[in-house]
Structures are given as C-alpha cells and as structure tokens.
Image 1: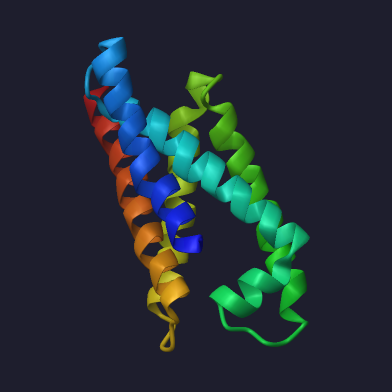
Image 2: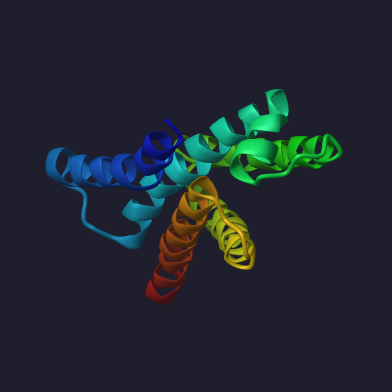
Length: 154
C-alpha cells in the first residue's frame, strides 16, 4: 500500500492534474502550472497524510520505514509528523491561495531534498526507505526546478 500511495501522490496524480488542466482548462504548460499540482499533491496531500500517520502511529515510520526499534525514537517521529502536517496544510491551502504556491514549493523542495539526502547517507536502507529516498529526491528536483524556472521567468 505504501508504494501505491507514494507513487500516486508523487508522480501519477500531479501529472494527471497538469494534463487535465491543460486539456480541459486550456492552461499553458508552465512551471507555475506544474507547481500548482505538485505542491497540492506531493507537498500537501502526501506530507499531510504522512504527518497524520506519524502523529497517530509513530511506530510505523520508526519501525517499518526507518528500521528503528527503540521507543525513544517515537517522540522524534511524532515531532516530524507535526512538521509534515504544517507543510501539508500549506500545500493543500495553496490550491485556494495561489500566492502561497512558490513558497510552499520552496519549503517542500528543501524538505524533500534534505530528507532524500539523509536517506542516501543511510548505509542500510530497506525497500520502503529506498522508495522514500527516490521519491523525495524526485519531489525536490521538481519543486526546486519549478521555483528556479518561475524565478528566471520574472
């Protein structure tokens, strides 16, 4: 289930939303259009869902994804959940508040980039953490690329 949810929220739903808005809404393919849907799905929905799980069930992230066995790690995972909830709410709200999109893309891109690099530095990754690493790095590339291209276009 984890693989399907992460793939849907990081790759499939943003791409489908961009394509739908282009085909049915006539929108031009721009970094801002990509940012709109990538921020909503990958930052908003993915991080909000991850945050809810980390707050309500920190042992899943600690034990299953990160391979941590100590109950002491649960406090930190729950706090990570609070950060994910905050970024997730920002990403979801950006759909109604377009002026927030690039800020959400920048914050989400930095978060995903640092998280992805942190996963890269782990010598013993399981498949779930490897999936998190790959999709985190992809998300960082897309989000920070949208920010850079939007900034260059100004």
